[in-house]
Length: 311
Length: 266
Image (cartoon, rainbow over all chains, first blue to last red; front, side):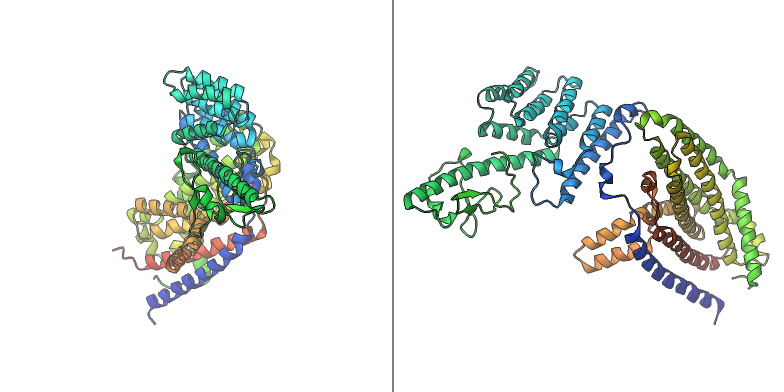
């Protein structure tokens, strides 16, 4: 056999058996490797943003971007990996997102003009620690006195805490800034007279959805608006159920039975009730409402993504 | 192929070529990078105290190990890709092959010589990390750090093998680029496997699974963050990793020898 053919066979055998070995080794090592525990991503941040200033050779903005992106990924991954059937947007403490504030704080320290950081802090951080959310948003206001939007965010945080007095004060301060839209002034009145009303909530979330600078805040506001729509619908459905029960002396067997009586009901914004392909009353996302015969009341289906916290 | 020689002679000739490769690397001032490394690690050890909020040792390990990897990769790539081309350029290859040295011995000798050079570099840089750790009072992280350094060295032996392979048939600049790309992809190969599982198409899954096994899985040697947190690699990582690096290097060098044996230098 010629020498070069012999060599080719030898090398082919080495490659073939070698990769066979690599296959086995890869499968053996990978699952046995020592890796950082799941909770590693929640370990304290080793570096403070304030200390990094000057060390980034003028690239503070870039590093702020990096912290900002990290904070988005951090919360996003927490939610995705939580495997919870329902995420309570008002209380994310069960996800243990203790790095959220340091990450946002570092981003804000490195680039104090980075308004998206404060927006995110105001919309998501209150679900972890409202006090820290207020501190960070107030820091944003100090650094960006011309940004009326930060007053809107801070007003929102106070409103979520049902502190309508402070919310009105913050909206008023924001409304005096040049360029602030008229709704800021309307919010002052709304907070003073009907802080806890559904109309006020709807107005706040509409503004937040339309002006959100990041996807997560926008989605959050959209879900809240759907929740308000569902609350309006549930109010009407429960009233119809009560009327039917009083009329017949028993609770209707299904929500389909009250559909005709709901045709006359006017929902805010001229919306109509949704009926799915099975003829069941459905929430704004198309999931059928659930009837509990014991108390003759309707509620949101457990599988819907619409949050159930505002009422 | 050159004349067949006895096994003892083969080992001797491989050792001679390896020794010469090491000497040449020293003559080329490869070890000068250690000055830069020493500066980096000293500055880190002295200054990081203010920056890290009391996590000096951890950051020293993180920074030190990262620097060892990067310096090691650059040496492996830039010296590795010129292993053969330089000999052709200087026409020293012809005088080597006029002696009873086979091309197989030449490729293996060059590879081992560079591994030794990089090994010495890594050893000195590791000692630098040790001194820095002693300075910041973080000697508790010494064992994890050295385990990680050993894994980095294994990773570098694979990179050197790949650089050697490319140097047998490609120009130094293209070889450097290709080796660097494989270094990057090698660190992402686990993602290839995850990607493979996400495909509905069976063919796509097979293609990505195959790529995962063909490309070096450098993620197996990544233990820097874990070491900085005081974790120790287990035997599966150390022994399995060693075996993986040896087998992978043998495969790559076998292909390199095959290509190099068929090259015509006239």
